[in-house]
Image (tube, rainbow, N blue to C red; front, side, top):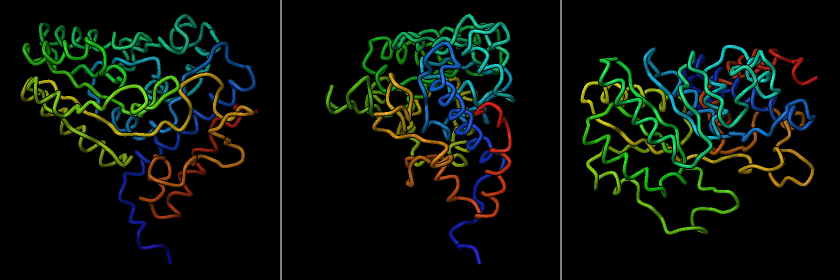
Amino acid sequence: MHDTMHRNTVDPALATRVLQLRYWQHIVNERMKKGTTKMAVHMALGYEAIATALRSMMGPEDQLVLTHRGVAHNLAGLDKLDPALDEYAQASTGISAGRLGSMNMSNPSRGVIYVSSILGNNVSVASGLAMGQKLTGKNGIAIIATGDGAMEEGTFAENLIVSRLLNLRLMILVENNDFAMASTIAERRKPIDLKSVCAGYGVRYELLSGNNVGSYADKLKQIRADIIEKNLPVVVEVSLSMLNRHAGATPGWPGDPMQVDFFKNGLIINQDDTDPVFVTRSLLDPDVYRDIEEKVLAQDRGFLA
């Protein structure tokens, strides 16, 4: 008899996308180790639940703006991995014809309008896109996926003011991984109470945590509906753990303290709720999870050869 805690409380389609996104990131990482990419990619292992949930709620006129760590959101919007791998190899068949690489890889056909490696720069761009949507009467929202570091920049506060004043349909997704180049938040600054900051500017604030892709998807869909109905910006802070270092050596290189090894450990990196794949497995009947995992791992085997 199966453990009664496993109740299939997550949509298998969402679960499949979470596992696929983790697998695809492992493929990118292994190819970096082998030198088959022409550039380093800022991995986002640990972002699979929020990236999958965000993609599940996006409408056809929504516009997504990303940071240098846009790999999870970019891959989550693809049907096949090949175009991203080609881009990382600077091939003409890549998403951006091999011209933009990793940290600036936009993909307008899949809703990714702009990507920037400049801290906080894309917050202003997202507000501009939201203003453009308002002026042209489009029925979508602008979404900015940014990090906790961008909260320290003046442009973040300025755009809270502007988006609230102009009633812009803007979702500011703050992915708080508690990590910068080589330090935690506590090591580099005093805490910022983002909820209170938002309240000071009259902007709605929501917090997501726990890496349950199903609950994330439901909450984001409701927030998106409220943004469109009320013509107001919303800040969504996501508490997550990055299961790889900020940059530098890719996860799993000799001497890397993260010790990410797909061939040894499979898709799951941490056996706790910091890992979206572990959480997803806990929400499914073991047989259902096993079937999904087998189907995901049966794809794209040649990329790991």
